[in-house]
Length: 180
View 1 (cartoon, one colour):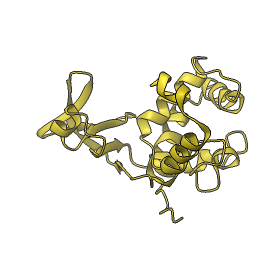
View 2: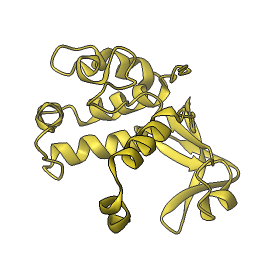
View 3: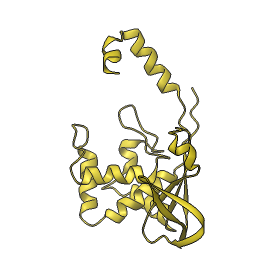
């Protein structure tokens, strides 16, 4: 892939950028607030749910593919269900507007991103939590990372569950339909 990228001329790069910019994001994760969750089991490196047995969710995020076969076969269009505790989305929404976090200041009013900052609306709650965790622990520290490092550090001062709630809110935000 690197050799192809290095060999591309300006017109090819522009055409590729326009192509990828025109792709409309699709919602692949449904966030469900619930007191109990289908009992998950580990299959390989991911959770699956089988049968009707349920257990209390506690403070967890349980995210599972809706079609395990398609997921195992690396189908990029497979949908997921993210189970979160009741009230998580509203609590995350409250955190997102706090001045010390202020997600919209960088990620845009609808959290769909800007020219230089990626969108977080509709992302997987576990993905967002993992990114916050990595900022918090210094695994992500590039030159553009400072605002997120500060959010991670405030999470480290007692808001790890807040970061978790924030991730649930962002995952539940509906991505608007993009028209070009």
